[in-house]
Length: 354
Image 1 (cartoon, rainbow, N blue to C red):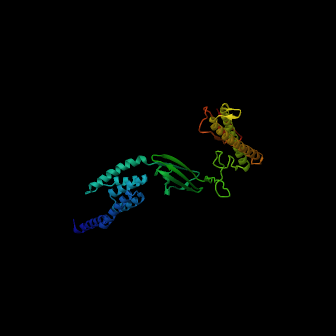
Image 2: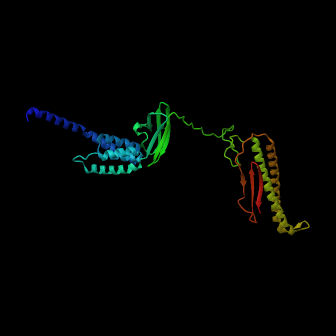
């Protein structure tokens, strides 16, 4: 071959050799990559996965070898970025084996193929359907979906995803929750009015700024089913009748116990003179009589207040669910009976089995 024809081949060979040499990381770059790998491992140990991903990404951009790619894939998987994790694992698995590759590179390719197989079945998919017009842009968490991907299952990361569609008819935004292995479909109606969320109801405020509540009638707020506030007349009526029912009930029970004690003492007394052993029962009967008197007085006051509240004007309201307040003693009477007192918007009562 003539010398003039050999020279171009030599030049080409030298250019190729210089290009390969330029692509190989320098000593300083290798040292920086090692430092990034150590930082990434330290961040993983501290459960700072976000910073670990950043460190492994920097190391992989410098070295672009199976070990750095596998570290990046595993960090993405730990963060729940299944799509990014599988992409990094596939990249490592497809890296061709070069002569002189250390055994650790072969092990990294093997682990990357195993990780890819695990992630493939875990990644959820979302099928998007846009109605009401042609969209100009569709994105999932600001990642644009190409037109060819509409109507087809799109791999997305698990969690709460926000989907946005824009078109001539306006913009629509929807949020959807996806778990691992989910396969869901979401419709995006362009031009459809957004459903406004109604503000949460706030408790009514009194003059002191604290929520008002009526205690003892089984409700946590002072609003009925129609949204009207409980009026003063209703509070007076229900509270008065409630007090009256409790007072009369307690007075009746203690009065009956007084008569019972008196009947027990009667055989021990003759002509107004009682035996010494009857003193304790007489004292108990006297105490019960005092309690009964006080209870009857309180019950009478309560009934009077309830009557006043009943005749006071109050707002009309639609029929609502009945609210019942009931009190039952924890113990039983000597004969195994049980007494109960109940209060309802339509009445009250005292009853029991003795």
